[in-house]
Amino acid sequence: PSTTPAATPNPSIPSPDQPANSPTPAFGLNAPTPSDHLLPSETESESVLIDIYDESWVVILSHKLNTSTNLTEYRPALASGYLLRRKGPTDGDGMFSMTANLVYTHLPPLAHDSVLKEVLKMYRDQATLFRVRGISNVQNNILPWHVAAAVRAQELLSYVL
Image 1 (cartoon, rainbow, N blue to C red):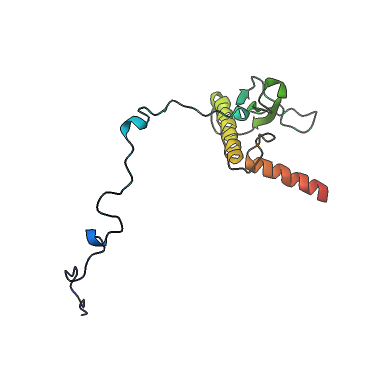
Image 2: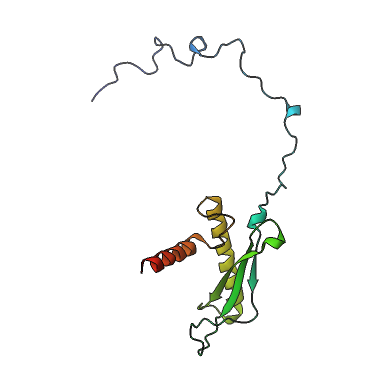
């Protein structure tokens, strides 16, 4: 068995935390503590930061859109809706829009509209998150990143092929 060569703590070795070895003078040249009258007495917990470019709406349609690409075939979606977002700070600037159709779910028909509403809210939140992170431009993109990446990839392939 190995033994420690010196006892710990060793009283013959001065501690770096003793007042004589302290880097701060002991006679009180520390920074003063701010007085209470300078601090705000009440924080503004009710404050909300609003980005007018991030104002968006989810619209659930009462009718079902056709999901078929063939004009003679009618395949209605279970639920249809739009995600709308401002193009600029005023109403005259117009809106960006994204259409979404719910094609399949295992839930009962009464839940179709609420499922689509939740999906559109998630898309809005994803698009907001990626705009905040700087991945997409706030003025010209309503799509979530994974959908925008698929659209850009399709555009790139259309130029190549």
